[in-house]
Length: 380
Picture (cartoon, rainbow, N blue to C red):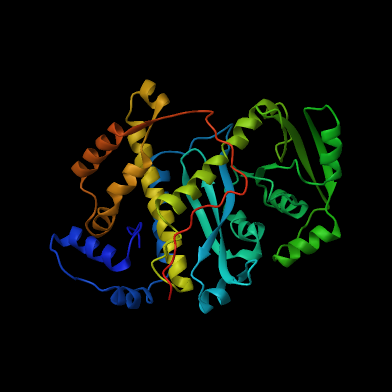
């Protein structure tokens, strides 16, 4: 499950055990895998990820911005096998032709500097991304600065973050708050407001098991002018304009884009939606397994990048797809027997030679009505 990028399950199993034993033959059938994985909880992959993150944190401190670690939060949808068990676990949707399908919502907390998914969750599509986010907010450190897009802001969420003592930056320009509307009509670059926590906001929070204590919260609005000429409005809990200058917020919010790239990697490079099992627990296993694999590849890429000369490191970065392919047949062998120090050094040297040019500022307009490619499933 950690190594299966794409292909038929039996083909992947045969290739996998051939790489381990060096012998051609049928070592394990896909039926045997299906029976064995019923005894495995998806939480084992979450535990592996926690161990990896703990070891990385012990080796080197996370880069900070004015004492804060930037943590981006975002969600994506996953198309699941349309079985009755998945419909019950994740809910059912209907298309324009009356055909049923199953969507899950996956959410991640992503450190923008180290490119690591520190927390992840998969749940029902109807629950919404805020409901998935709430379960991880108490796990944020006091010096974590949460960065979210315009799908997340809500009065109860900002009040709850203030209650927890956590900082945030959120895009607000399409939110119909009176404070945002008056700020947009003005010519001010920034302003600080106080908003009352209404009974409606308390009811919304209570539905998610949250009791709001305070009667109001303060937030700061910052106007950001984009190169396209459009205006963004960002809300933040960092109300001290001297300690946190408004000029730096555009760069901070732009760093959130790295979690979009992380989800693209999971879905396109690691073929997350081509699940190796049909049942809900198999879906969760595949999801958390791919998150662990992506984090390990990110750690290897960071090590290879750190070995480059400073002038070269500013212009180039390791090829992530190349690193993933080298993990395919090595990852499980490392988990079984450990990583040989010489092999690690040779691999990092190879990764440091396989580089891609950084292209800051490069962007392509998102085409209208763009449909992401989905792996086709065989007719059952």
